[in-house]
Amino acid sequence: MTVGALLILTGALFADHRRPVTGRQLMFVAVADTSVSARRPAWTGGAATTLTARRAGSGRVYLRFHVTGARGPITAATLGVFVTSKLTKGFQAAAVDGPGWDERTTSFADAPGVGAIAGASGTVTGKGWSFVPVTDLVKGDGPVGVALLAPDDSVTFASRESGLAARLIVRTGRPPAEERVPARPGRWPVSDPVVGAAGDIACDPAPARPPAEDRRSAGRECQQLATSELLLHDRVVAVLPLGDNQYEDGTLAKYKASYGRSWGRLKRITHPVPGNHEYVKAGNTPGYFRYFGVAAGDPATGFYSYDIGSWHLIALNSQCGALDGCRRGSKEERWLRHDLATHPTRCSLAYWHEPRFSSGPHGQEPVYDDFWRALYTAGVDIVLNGHDHVYERFAPQDPDAQPDPARGVREFVIGTGGKDHYSPSRAFRVVQPNSVVRDSQTFGVLELTLHQGEYDWRFVPSAGGSFTDRGSGVCH
Image (cartoon, rainbow, N blue to C red; front, side, top):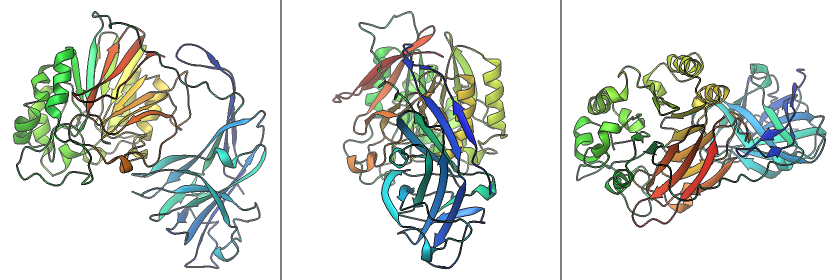
């Protein structure tokens, strides 16, 4: 039996405005795990390297942790599991009715029952670490049982035997203070640069446009001209298109006909990244690179970096399948670590298309976990993404989805550039940890004022929109 590992982090954390947040964070590795299947009622899965949860309760995964040293009240608990499925609609974490199961002998026929659902993952789009809140399951020191269920489709997970055991992160003591992000009064200083960003921008110019990504889209569509007017009016110094800049397939002709007549009016100050619609058909990526030219970086890679004022900005290519991947050891991940090491500025920002964390329909994207870990280790302040056609802001967090006011990365999802909206019922089915602001029915852009050592943000709605979000942060 593998002994559960324990990591204790102590000390005070400090929010952006340097108010102390007391508490402790502890991490425990699973001491037992197994899966059971109704198809094979007598089978025991405790020695397998893969654990499987099957739809409608026909297969369940059981995990056990042993919590020690949890002094003070439990303020939060998060389960981390390594998903090995390529794509899943998600899984649920539930209570186990009693600790009486053995990974070597428990089968479906004698497996314990399942209690209340404690948390859900939402969509998980690839292999890697996925995180679910399970605070209701942890009461203090002692055994903690967790059952993993798959309500919609089968989901596979790495077991302890694979070397990627599940982990339980427990926070104790005084809970972190509610994040307060004051907006600066009056006008922003005209001497500091303002950049504008959004993704998912220009509709296909063809009269017989293919079906939208979401046929249940609510509200207006094709508002790329309205959002570009915001950037022109506010005289930003740089424009950051966050991918899926031109639907449906990003050919050069479509870029010229639709994107070019809207956001293309700011092409001279544009620093783009590609999205999945730029790569939707073989051979179409040249349309993106031919339209933007040298501003898009090397066509063989599509990632690059540059400086604006005192800030360092990093543009990444999230289309991992077109490269040699995005995980640790890939060409892009190695380049990212080198770029961060050679640009040790106090304030930095990274952006790419698909978000690592999102409460939108695309959910968690573990393929970008190594990007996040590199950015977090280097002290990057902000990440910008699109892909989900929503606006969402997260509180600063670490790569394990834990709140970290002192060194965490603040993520914005701004898929509001003009293409379309999701229906309200689909937009935010599972709210991810640390999500603090969400809106699914407003087109607009995010404007960031890049000060020396700090920044302001403001979501600017297009004409007719009333939602906005604004605040300030201090660089690490």
